[in-house]
Length: 473
Image (tube, rainbow, N blue to C red; front, side):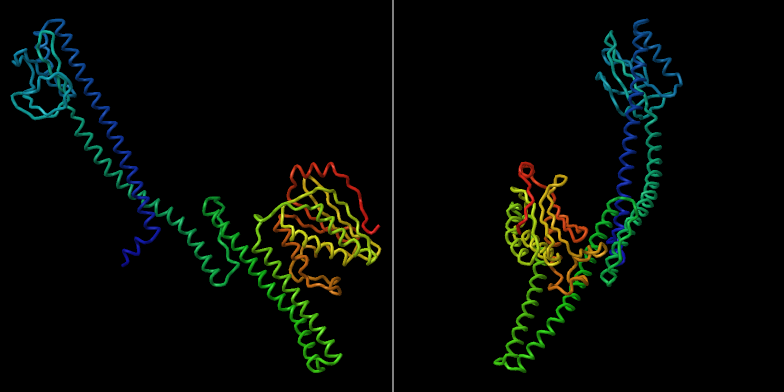
């Protein structure tokens, strides 16, 4: 059982695989070296054979067949490093000289086992030989014993055994070290996952700065965990905020219904209590609708559904809708809207985003001051600016106002649920619109910078007149 578990270990399998690859590489290398060495030495032996044949051919040219016989007898008695054997026969197969016995008379190269007679003793040996025809019709065979083969085989056998043993030890050691290093990082990831499953959401995988695949995996996992942590924290905060912000209107609704029940629905007091209860329930329903709208924009919608939106026409329509309302409240609604500008997006959401911002500006700007709406191109990008002359938002609070249910102290006396700007931020993020808040000195300037405008739209923007309009004029 323990043996099976060991072989299921990734570390053991990696180590064995590394040893096997190391051994295979070593065997291939040794075999290649052996073949190269054998081929080189074979070539050297054949050159020795050719040299002996050339010497005998020279002897024939110098003194005829008799000189060849004399040279063979002299060379046969000499002691050289490589043992050389000869056989010279006449055209009828009669042996004229040499110690080689019973060799084929076929002309050409031979690797063969033959019997030689040296000093009266027959001996079976392996030779590398060549057989040629002498001009007078005699057959000459010269063979050299490749004594190096046995030595080379023995040397390579010992070297191979030693090298393979070293390869097993070295490959096993390196494989175990590399596997241990690799698995230690896998274990770090596993430990982090276990910690997170145990509730330690702030646990992260250590990156070692090697910039390899595991480092990139660790960075991706940490980014994913950061995102999950953010979503969990945000969900917890939203849940707490929903519970906190709905507790008061639900309490008021309950109290109004009790008052209506106590006073009776056929009395004036009861009817007033019911009207207030209906108003409270409408406010609660509006809050839930706002939460659902934000969730829908953040989770379900996609940029794939975007289509061209006539932005200039949309801003003109908003100007016509809010201009008279501003005039009734003693404010001015000033616009600077070049015609013919289009963007890609969801028309209903962009209209909702701009309406929320305009209503927010009109809510906070004092009487007699303007609300300005401007569309322009800056640095190749379209930009919408909505500006009021209200009290503005302190710089330290500008990032926080986009969170759900956040209402600054100055806004708590005005109607609202603290979700309007959250919906604006969600729509802007969906459209990749940069949303910034600036000091209008006094007042607040909201800037929406779209990601990019089409070239034809840019041309239309250049050609179009840009008058400053006052819809209240």
